[in-house]
Amino acid sequence: MSFQNPVFIPGPTNMPEAVRQACYMPTIDHRSPVFGNILHPCLNNVRKILKSESAHVFIYPSTGTGGWETALTNTLSAGDKVLAARNGMFSHRWIDMCQRHGLKVQVIETPWGEGLPADRYEEALTADKNHEIKAVLATHNETATGVKSDIAAIRRALDAARHPALLFVDGVSSIASMDFRFDDWGVDVAVTGSQKGFMLPAGLAILGFSDKAMKAAGTATLPRTFFDNADMVKGYAGNAFPYTPPVGLMNGLKLSSQMILDEGIDNVIARHHRIAEGVRHAVRAWGLELCARTPDVYSDTVSAVRTPEGFNATSIVTHAASKYGVALGVGLGEVAGKVFRIGHLGSLTDVLMLSGLATAEMVMADLGLKIKLGSGVAAAQEYYRGNAVAAKAAA
Ligand SMILES: *Cc1c(COP(=O)(O)O)cnc(C)c1O
Image (cartoon, rainbow, N blue to C red; front, side):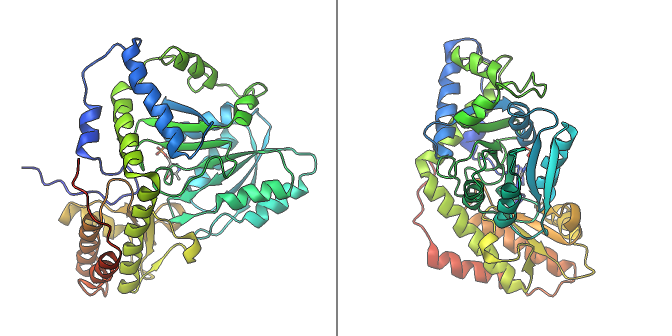
């Protein structure tokens, strides 16, 4: 008997049993047409999930971090300038990667808990008369703080400044769970990974490139071998990779991306919003606050919950794991010890979410926080009761 509970961390996320089965497959010849029957549906499904007609989709054996590196090395040269805002741990790490690649990063320091300041992007871009900035980095959903940002507004900032820089978006914890519009927002590179909205184990970097970003490879001199899109393009043309593809994971992606499209991408987005709203009702009923400062930036995939001054929020996570066998997320970087995170993305339902909220209440009561058992659960129940969507039997 296994007592496996669902996880409530913002990635890796829970896996539907059918997806797990799809990853577990016999060896095939990855240089045979059989692999093409896995590869091409993955590429086409991902393009649809990005809401793009024309994005060049790439799948690398890697993670989201390798996706960032793919974005940078295929488009930029050492000494190039990029513009980025830092409002959490993930935007910070992307900036750090740029610096380690010899890029000059103009950083817009932004309080953790706030979204990307489109007005300050516009100011910086307008001031850059010589167009030295080659790329603009935007983290769509800051997983450390539970803050989403308005990517359309960043595009408008570029357009208002009449600036030709490429727009790179980290959508690792938003794509396939929150509204993401590659074409409408004029995104040049979108980055995600397999272990969040796609409900798979970690192991794939998943990207979309615009035509403009593809052209940038012609002049980009940052060294790239494993992550060279040009090699990948040649490989895909022959139903192959330039090296051995992670076939099982990609077979899982073929299924999970199809499940997302079958549910309907907008229904997936609505489900994530509904589940997240229930969580936010619970947090309010507990008398606690989110790290995200204003409702317009509330993330629908992760909530970072502030605990009272002097309380070590990390103890919630260790206690939940040791006493109840449930995984919640720790605070990272500046908000380490100050917040705990509830992941609510991927393969989840209202009912599963209630179990996570109930567990968080037991943990907080155990640790002496003044939380009335059932208070958050009841608030979420009321919300879910009023917003239920008729259940379909699992396929
Ligand atoms: C998880 C995450 C990453 C890092 O992805 P890995 O797959 O762990 O390399 C990057 N950005 C955001 C916003 C994330 O949530």
